[in-house]
Amino acid sequence: MRDIDIGLLRAFLAVVESTSMTAAARHINLTQGAVSQQIKRLEEILDSPLFIREGKKLVLTSVGERLVVRAQRLVSLNDETWQLLSAPTFVGEVRLGVPQDIVRPFMPGVLRRFNREFPQIDINLICEPTPDLIDAV
Image (cartoon, rainbow, N blue to C red; front, side, top):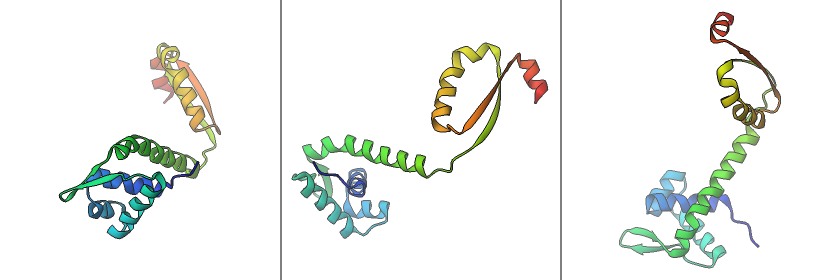
């Protein structure tokens, strides 16, 4: 088993989107030569060509086509993980006023997701009729 460098996958996806090494290089702020080298390295790791040249455009091979969706998922998961772990940790309390009629159908899912994203924040849920919540504001 080998690991695939996320930077190689980013270069691959940039070439897929632009169908050109030069345009991909501009998109990800690298030189055309650097992008070409990254694609070559990825092809060596996978032991298969990912593109064929048709005129001035690069077209995916069958292996390249199979890689696209997985590469998108890996890059997306990498970016999501990086964002989650590099974001500042919030601590404290949030007071949330919610009308009684929407607490049961909507709030359990919302509160679970919020707690997963911000475990250090306590939620003080206030369930009152709408006029009382407006007066409290």
